[in-house]
Amino acid sequence: MGMTHQTEDDAARWARMVDAEERAFALLDAIEAAGIMKPGRTEGEVDRDIEAIAADQFGIARNWHQRLVRAGPNTTCIFSDRPDEVTIGPEDTVYVDMGPVFEQAEADVGRTYAMGQDPARHALVAALPEVFEEMRAFALSKPDVTGAEVYDFACRAAEARGYHFGGKIAGHTVGEFPHATWPLEPAHQRLWPDNPEPLSKPDHLGRPRYWILEAHLVEPGRQWGGFYERLLRG
Image 1 (cartoon, rainbow, N blue to C red):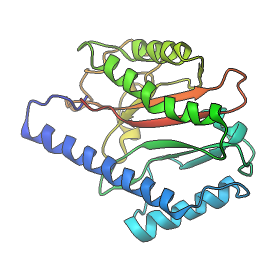
Image 2 (cartoon, rainbow, N blue to C red):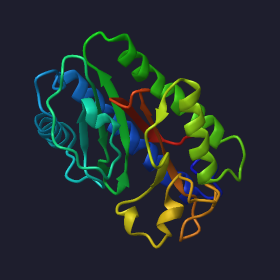
Image 3 (cartoon, rainbow, N blue to C red):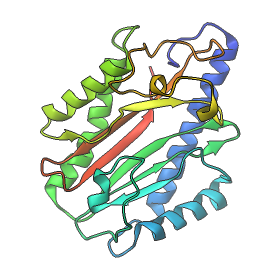
């Protein structure tokens, strides 16, 4: 999972993954500093600005998955949904989910932002990294923890805070580009009820598998939510 390593090659590979994530965090910081997420702008307008910042400031030429900017009711959607574009409202949550590739290493990060002053929205945004940390601690709590167990825990962690868990998965594998073409059973690449395999199971080349954890919280009325994801680190 990237927490312990047997060889120098494994350690170097993990270091590349961590470096890619740190650079993706820097990109998120640059996006925030640019002030491009604000009421009155469409999701597409924000996405196009993110693409320009990524290319101009970070030299990013490709992403391993489609970048998502979602606002308002679209924050309840899962990755595979393709909802109609919306304009950011004055009291909306907005999330960014992106998978930039740095050299060959894939990053996958997501953050949510609350427009306006609504306490409920700000509370959900604050809860996202806290639920992520609970998920991370659980995933590291035993060496044979399975994808199904992590998903079940994520659902319970959300419910304990009064939210719904909005995802059909609670994370997935990540690696060198293009990891999505590796010969693995799709069900075993995801943290969800259909994965009884331990996260510690090696990949098709016998190397440690690296995992992204996703916290997707939806408010009780299922009208809006938020999303947070990053690499599972020890």
